[in-house]
Length: 426
Image (tube, rainbow, N blue to C red; front, side, top):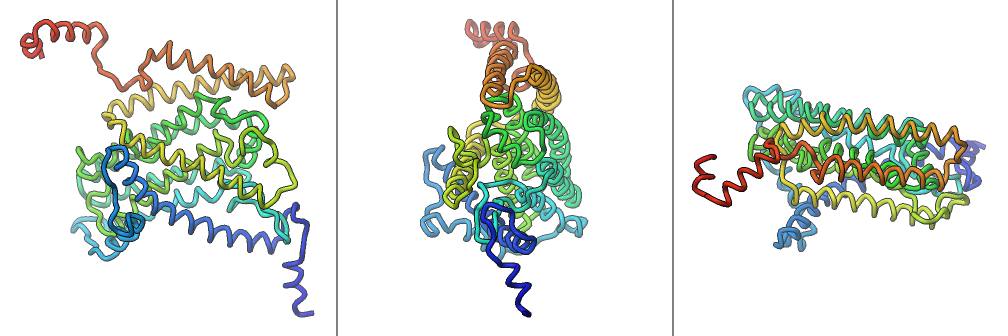
């Protein structure tokens, strides 16, 4: 009789129904341990992937000595652990020590609300493949991810170094500029799903189609903003080596220096998972409803997990590909793009999508394939108007010369006829 409560805790239940509170608690702890262990190992391996991909793009060998390259992250980690910690004489030590952790923790916490597979049936009940399935999961992502900038700003200020301070100031301005556009772009996603739960957003895409097709302009805005939020090229102005030595982490060494890079790659993983969940159906397998309908099985969980990881790895490769392909913006171009293009475009797009959704709902069109086809056709028209008619081939409008076309043509004409005169004019 003394073992009766423990027996009741582990008693067999319907695999398709939610588990008891005790099993839910145990399952959550197990998911936390597994998910975050894989997350940390994956982030470490991304440093190797970055160097291998850059070597491939530049037609050279990457790391190939330590364990044929596979143990290079472990070697780098051991090196940084063994290095001596240095502290600037005039630094604010409490904030100087705390800043790297503040930069890393939000990216790790945000991952907790992202679903990564279909529910797993167990003898003790159905286990949802998300660490914490919050009903406000998407709002949680926006709120927590915005805290990462505090670590960068505090690192820049507490170092008492002019280059670090400039990097911190750049980061704060950049985050504010692009976080507004990022939040605005996702309003359209919420209009279609009618809910801020990431699980509901994934289910909506399974019935209507992926949001990348239904909300193409919103996806473009979110993608550009994600590059800016993660401080990746062409938006790495806070740590521009050619301008600010190393930006906000100029004075850092050993593991504190490494923690900023770990935070950057962790933010990349989180941003890739968010893009996958909001615009590419999350763990949904395309062209079939088999994986979305009960009864859920272990095979469905494994396949949907593989599909989700494939999508996330594609966007991680895309992040690295862009870094080694596109040059860095000037700072005025960065701010102009955020305030003069991204924000007005996001506001206009919200107005258009809200109007179309209202008209379709009033017309009695059911949320399904037909609804998605109408939105897809409208987005094709809007994309042509934006990128072909209005933008005229300059995909990023602010990032061009301040000279007008007539002046550029005149200078080219002078250069072609008389190079000496062109040099004198310049």
